[in-house]
Image (cartoon, rainbow, N blue to C red):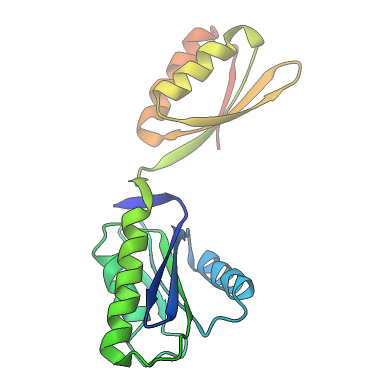
Length: 196
């Protein structure tokens, strides 16, 4: 499974109706609810804010809403595209501004499905890998080397510089024990390392 790493939005026009598809990362159902509320607030004149989400490590948790479109003409086609994408922890919202022409059930299914496909095609993703957070407190003398080790482990980090350097790193769990071992050796066991 893959997960989104940056939001992506696109727009599709069908018979003067605007369909704005927004695809983004969502960790859980609370995030989904919050993002839908924020999107409704950002588009107060929209007729519908349809959504679907696929959540969980295996992509087995789902959420969808037709938001007053005819049953199964909006949320369901969005969800079907998501289920076939191999992406999890993903939310797609499709904001519709009605253009005055009725699309019919087939037209709605096609429009919502097409808008979602375009958004998913543009979405940047990465492989879902279990990650772990590590806090390392060390002297300035080994900071550059530790930073290089974190990058080699395909991790990311933030730093706090005081009398010592504190680095908060997020690394793949599979690389964490080797990273800790290398930092311990590098610092002659003086670095303080906490798994968070």
